[in-house]
Length: 314
Image (tube, rainbow, N blue to C red; front, top):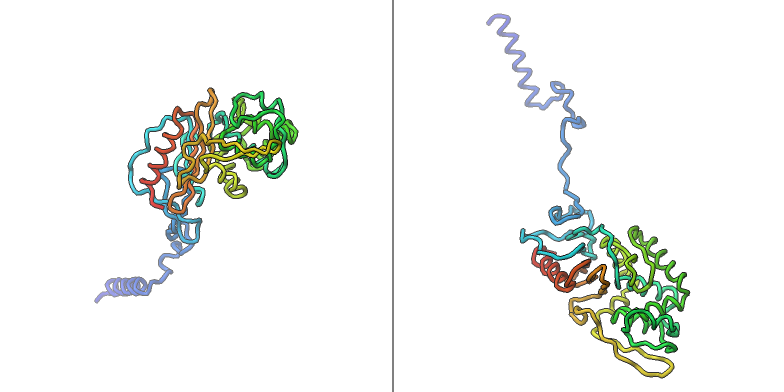
């Protein structure tokens, strides 16, 4: 064997030995820290912000999100804005123009109820003022000079959407100061697109977004669940302390009395059309549905609830 063949054979043997022994000296630039080598795949940690992005979360992350189990198509909605959020896990299941500012109408009264409870206390007596009974709307059938506990007025506020009760509560604390407290709490909750100019929602300038409303809803669920509990009832009784008589007030929310309904609030003025905030229980989850600017708030909410229940596995 000539010298050339002997050298070629030796080189081949060295290469084969290096390969079988997995030696790194032949490829020193391809070590485990090289940017050319992709890192090992990790479990995806996805926080859903749309239907298309829903996925299971990896181990060690936030609670598992619902799984999209079929492409049934989004229901045909007639709304100006909408949001569906799982308040138990924080997952947004559906959104449509959820950042669009819109007149709140009587959804305002959710904030009014919170501020009245926190600043006045539920047992404080409030005298109905002449200014309050002159406000548009007669829900609650109040008369100037009557006296009610704050709790009773909050019941009228949330169950019958009484404008009189809203103004009576604000006047009891000091009207301008009460409105300032409403806006201060909105700022504390980082409701950055929300403004209140009256305690009942009669003004078109009471504005918010579906995103902001879910922040207030979360605060009520976590801090004042008794307020939503009030809205579950089909009717309530108000006790007037001067006459010592009770009167019955019927709920205007069609969902009141349903076993899966955890609470909510209706809203309407001409400029806003119909608004609705609803929280439902579904397989141990709390589902929030917000709809703005519709001609049938209950129908649109039912569409979204049915779609969520049949499209996702929780």
